[in-house]
Image (cartoon, rainbow, N blue to C red; front, side, top):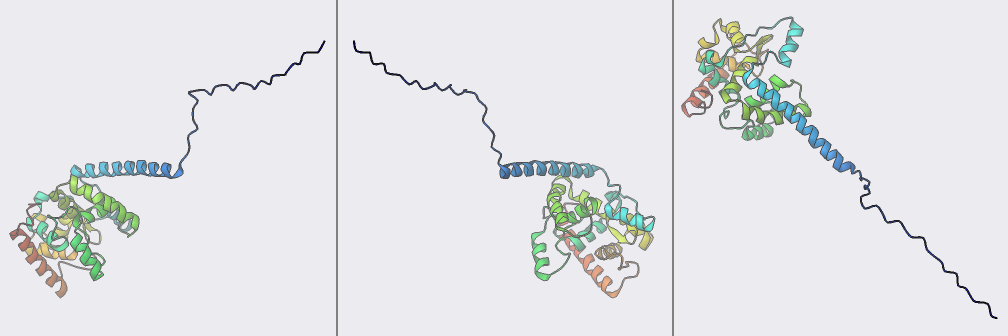
Length: 250
């Protein structure tokens, strides 16, 4: 009797079905992470800047880095805050004529003045009053790319949230007019023995002429150059009043 042949069947083990909801491993993308982190940090920094700009839109700055530094160096400084309504209007016009003739027309940066300053190699001429307010109130005097970058962000904020009159008010109260003398109230009494509301057109022009270099220019004893400069500023102040370029702050 022939033996039956038996064939061995090979069985392959069944694979378990993959879990449908198995969590996938998140791929870390360093570049994307850096971009998003940078955006978040930038938003936080911009928010902080916005808050501090809003605060001083109505609150008078108690001090600045420059005032604080000079107070530490000298022991005391001469400074009394004065409301813009108690400053002779000619003083406001003189400062604008001297420092930023297109003050009412720009949004914080005078591009024409910046280009002219670059072409002439000037070190200071392109800076607007708004930029100087940001630098004096919130930042520091030493030049650096960091300071310029912060200034470039904060200046449009100040222009958007403060009135032009407020910008001038703050500027006139923090500007340095002599060693240890800050603000137009202290300067008017220091040089001319009068309150800021009593300043004449010539006195206002002399004070404005001293601003670029207050520690070396004396409005009470003006040099021939300072007198010539003050005369040009007085003429400019009259011009911007006549042609309407003072309308935004008067």
